[in-house]
Length: 347
Image (tube, rainbow, N blue to C red; front, side, top):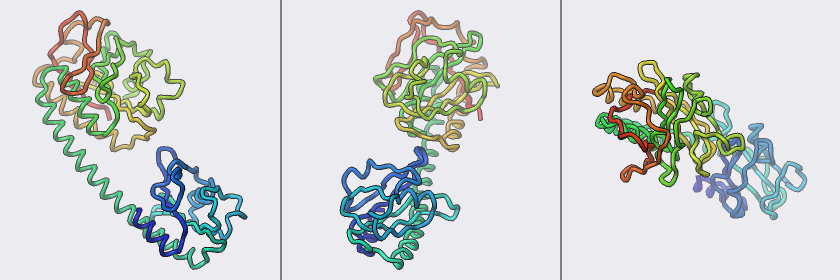
């Protein structure tokens, strides 16, 4: 896109320009590339309808502004700008992707012919962007498929229970490219959740102790049997939640229920370090890994995990696995159990 913008500025005789894309998570226009603009332009994010650029994104129509000083929509970014030429990036489905914007330091620096030309250019830029995103999507799918295969090979070799826990969180972390992954084990007879593995936050301990489901945010996913999504767990209403890791980088949360022979056995949580809306692909990707874990455990156990031994003491500590960057919750009074969990993810 940098080269496209450079050529556009040269062709139209513009003084500066930018290409902004609509962020689907925030709903704002964010500058992707720019030339001739102030260094802090990257920090500018406009709502659709805000400024001339936002107006074009909201209405989906190009704009020629001969004198920005006479247009009340204009938001000054560079004092020397006098004229502006802006066109939306709209694919065939009509959904706005972003905006290309060119500036001139001369009043009436652009004319009607320029408006027609930038409209055509915007169509070409849109086609190029779609092609690039398709290629990136395919590469991402190929990488995810490779990770799934590797995760399956790893899980079927993990016959010790804690190794299986750590493999699930570690593989989930790699598969979804998230900031952290946390696995809870569920005890239905006591209606409690227990954090058994945390990956991605090597200096942070998982939530401690046996947690009553009534006090847990993520427990709702077991009763609904559906994924639960929380866009921003740093907001004040989440400060007293007992089942979330205390780490300032965590932002969005996806909680996924886990079932074994139609019985709830746990919850897998995925965290990002930025506001994020999880798509259906991300929600579905964990299912094959859980299916492989069930296949693995079927070789060694025919009972749910909580039936393998008496409940552990609530006095627990967090231990870091030296080879996995995972923290695992262990009991202070009982020896580790060796029967692995056999999780699957509810659809």
